[in-house]
Image (cartoon, rainbow, N blue to C red; front, top):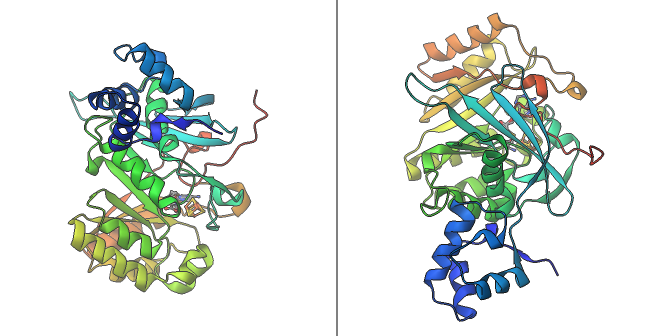
Length: 351
Ligand code: SAH
Ligand code: SF4
């Protein structure tokens, strides 16, 4: 029924297509370049391909560029949130963050991409989970957020974080394929170190990821230092408790040579005490890691509040005293609900 989205195909798959149709193999390279590097939206824009080949492509394939239904910019101008419409009418949110670069460098931009429509993991603090899960995104729909994020905002993108809607490791095959597509030097050519995948902690998939020969940055949503607390915040902890999760992280570090990042969303009165900081420090002290403290972003339905600045800085200094690499990540775009955990499926009543 549906036509194949060219943005989901890697070079090998394009070669098979092209040679099956009796065209020389080099046409696949040209095709890949148009689709993944030039990010064209129309098959007819691929001007160095013969007309007969383009007609053949149009019969069975399509380029599913994402349509931006809305675009919101934060007050400080640093963050743009896009609502994209997918080919089947579902919607996802993608965020482009324009961080100020160092002197004499142009600004660095990071795109935060979604991996699923909605999410089934049900974390207590997160807006995405509230609406439930609808479907996985295809590899093309994931890379398209980078291409079309750049096209719609005009901001060249250097870094990708898989921290938007959804749990990327529940859409493992499509996410891994999308990451390889973004990294391809004939495509967007985004280096492994410029790609971060954030997971709520699916242990078997973390162990698989370590073996993909794809040394991206792995971020773990930890958010609590004891199973008792984490069970309450993140249902996934009942299946994969902290001990198992940290063993998988250790393996990731050993196999890839990369530090892992632990994300810790600080919630007033829940996980922000000095005792929590000491427990967290002890937990991660044996692992090559960075800790990101994220004052919780408001999601009205949850009732959770961010701790005051004094509590946040105290928490950081306890970890620093334990020789842990720790930073406080002040989120951008909270005023337009574009920060971590604030993205949701929107109904299509905008147009
Ligand atoms: N599902 C993945 C990636 C998407 S969520 C994951 O959970 O890691 C991206 C990040 O936002 C995660 O670290 C998540 O724990 C965090 N997050 C969710 N809700 C949040 C909130 N209200 N405030 C701050 N961070 C939040
Ligand atoms: Fe899903 Fe991540 Fe939100 Fe948890 S924090 S509900 S895993 S998107």
